[in-house]
Length: 286
Image (cartoon, rainbow, N blue to C red; front, top):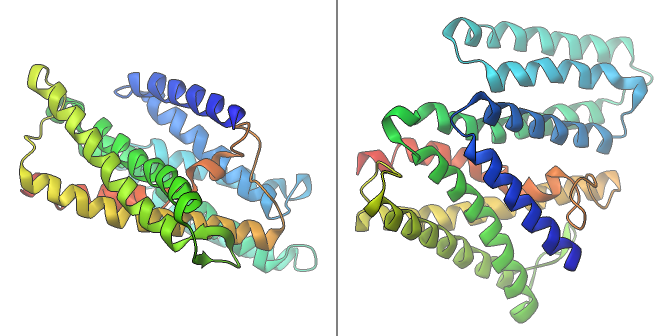
């Protein structure tokens, strides 16, 4: 537990440093690097190694194209490059039919797509809410995503230990309980409300966010928190199901006591796209 706490404190400090450079390309580069590390964790989890280096090699430029391109001309490359990538993977499957297992390849491609979708959602928030117009709104929503995910995880853990009786998904994750899931939903809602309240207080004296928080915003926020918590549980169970099938305990060791990037961000995978979509069609229309 001591190792986990120390790692969490160091991780939060690094997060603060990264967010301090939010309005620079460094933020995008760090997210891209984290995304590529997570993809490599899946690459290794599927049993691929040096002999299949080409599968990860093609993922690097494609991920950077998705994560870093901002001009319309560059965005226009996404479709043709995606097409070429699909063709390449199909050729690999045909030419290496005796050594490249289809199930592992499709698992790697699908899981990598989920990871890119997740981390791109954070960059999408930055581009959708430019600093010059919306101040720190994008930072607020990125922190909201993390609060939904990690606040729900923490509450679910303690609620499960205190009240857990009924197994939620015993085959996939024996320690998760229905009572813990309920606690996670309440924890996500509470974490989101507390973060929003803190931002609202800061906004009274400084131009931190452009939104004027009204009661209806808090109602939407609570609804988002409940949905996000369920999505966080699904992300966690999905990552656990993959680990169980491929026979590993953790995806990596980058975070002592926590595992790899995916062990820490599994609950964020589906929350980030959900919040990015919900923000577009809720907060700024109220």
